[in-house]
Image (cartoon, rainbow, N blue to C red; front, top):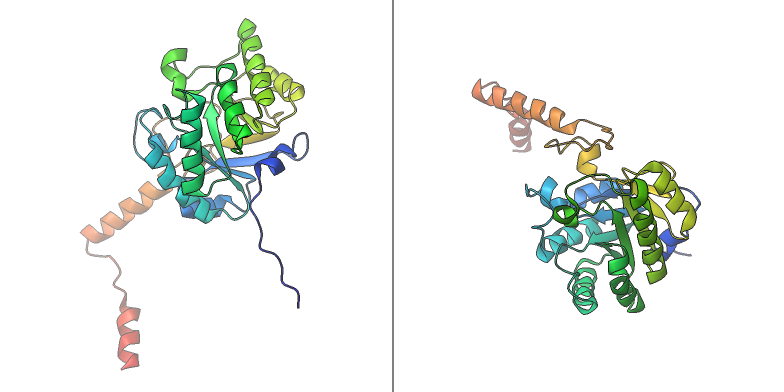
Amino acid sequence: MSQQAPQKNLSAADIRARKGTAPLVCLTAYTTPVAQLADPHCDLVLVGDSVGMVLHGLPSTLDVTMEMMILHGRAATRGASRALVVVDMPFASYEESPAQAFRNAARLMAETGAGAVKLEGGRHMAETIRFLTDRGIPVMAHIGLTPQAVNAIGGYKVQGRGADADRIRADARAVEEAGAFAVVLEKVPAALADTITAEVDIPTVGIGASAGCDGQILVIDDMLGLFDAFKPKFVKRYAHLATDADRAIATYAKEVRARTFPAPEHIFADEGAAK
């Protein structure tokens, strides 16, 4: 009797091979239950450093640590049996040198079981991307708006307008040539995202970019309406779970205070019957 081989997670090579085919579905996940929910529908699950803001209440991604990314990376990989799990390299874990980047990327992959890492930066990170990929670490690049550089670029604003488009296009070509298997395009004009998608041979994954990208990604807490401290203009809310949760908690609190909270009488009845 033959046995069916266990299903394997998609690999970075599988994602790269999707260039120009069916759009890639990508979401963030930071916990096992959320990864389990996303996994059947997603090709790629990103353990993003956005976890610092949406789960830990930090003002930006800059205070996220390696330990935080490892903790949440482990949780997400336990919940994903199909999608490729990619873990963000946190701020200051890779910028110093390619050797520093390799040590931390190798640690992330070894301690989480993820299939790839993601790092921010274009041409100035090409040498690091090449160093990692030459040593067997798949890298997803991230250009355009790079949140870890928010202080240097002057805020969370659109990148690549006007003459600046050439810089973003050059970044895309540089990360492709360095060996990245895919590239996130964040908050760039749609026309520029479409141009880059046509010019590079690796998948582009848009976030606030263009529907013409090879895939899309959103922070799951944003699209579910769980994180409502602020709402990026490009985010579509597919649910309003924070509102639903607030309503449910308020109802529970009202019942407890009014002593109308329903007692589990059936439990006591079952115990009596068992005796």
